[in-house]
Length: 339
Image 1: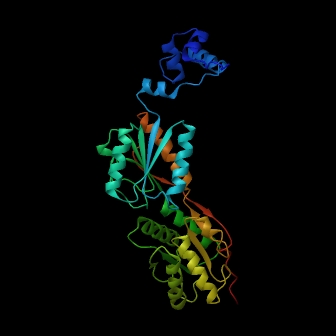
Image 2: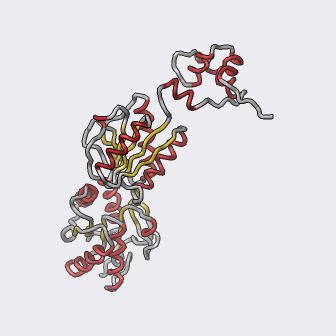
Image 3: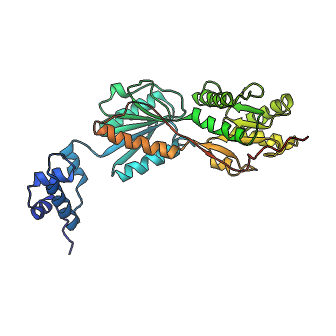
């Protein structure tokens, strides 16, 4: 015979309170005396009471459902953010509806209408790059949090990696190893990630009183560009002793050509990448020292702040999340100068 599940009426009866008071205590409402709340919680625990999510939603006006709208669900940046957000939503017992707009503004509007029709309580918008994107918040009746791409409206809540700080970590690491002839190979200049990482490089070099070797070489985010840039750099600046690359793909391409030209990594040239894309960074030989943007943490934090916004406690502004340096075999102290 099936065992009957405890109801809120059972909890109220055991705690000696009304059903309304039991409901307030279980939902964390402030107008319940602490001793009464404790009695209700103890009764709920004794009865192994599990609140009915649908009923609780009807009482609160919430559906306990959130939307995740992404343009990069198949990309190496979007997926970690989505995983981190989903972890937080699962811990908060929220159902998640994932929609992939594939970078198409019309498709994005379609999915926004679909999510609103499902009465989601809030929305996280995950960008395909760290470039600033147009706000959609002013037209929506629900809270929105932006992850990876910041909204262009400062009143919105946005979470982005601190690429300036990440680049500073990389360059300070090279300087601490005694490297003084540091070059920079990076991606297209119309990406905010590119310009932020360049700013971090310059800040760290200026702070140390060290001049950058050669001009910054800018091209596609690809190994092919890394190989081509390596040919240019090694021809023009043969005494370079370190390279900070704007991505792991570029760094992998650079190492390939450096080896072909008889330059040892890290003995002759120390190399740092960016992104910690492990399919590359751990498989490159030598394994690549790189900057990790902590994207799962970024996604988890964005989700937690969406919870706060749903509760009326939004945190407006662009929040820059710290990166971390992952040190592997492509960097080592500079060899002592020959007498």
